Image (cartoon, rainbow, N blue to C red; front, side):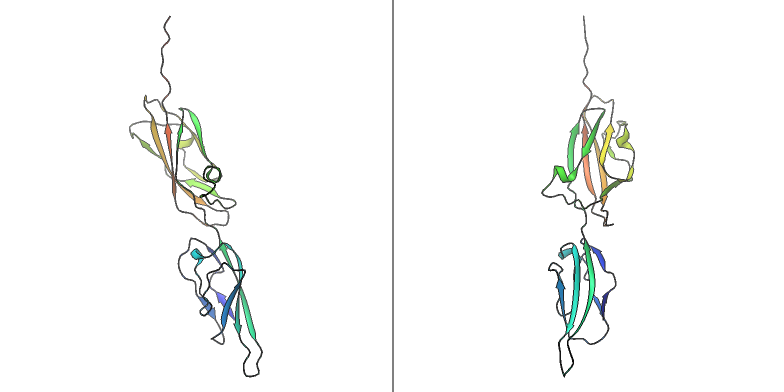
Length: 193
């Protein structure tokens, strides 16, 4: 029989996964459908070079010495990890920012179903002496949107930098990405008679 120590992996995993074989060695490993980067001789595969999908790995020992063909199978699932590009955006003072990766970068953003976003640390403000308020200053966990309201009283634009972790609904955690929001200052004017 054959089995893998873990049947599910995120496609961000770069380590080679080995098969546990109990029985006669020397058989051939095949996979259906195609897309799993399996070694036909050893049965090893690498999640990061495989296409996300559900696969059936078959180990086959050819008929020999009057004995029939022997086969055993194991299911392997490769899940997609989120891949979110960095984003710079500009808003007016006391307004909401909104970043929707799959709409902003449809060719490069990979957003699996159920992806949520977390920033557990307060964003970095530049210049640091400025106080920024609003819902966007509150650390969030498992938010389905990347949004928030930002406000400040400085006469110059202020940068608010978020470092965000995406987590897919399948449990795969993507690399951190950044969103830099430049908050323009409020217009200043004086009306004279």
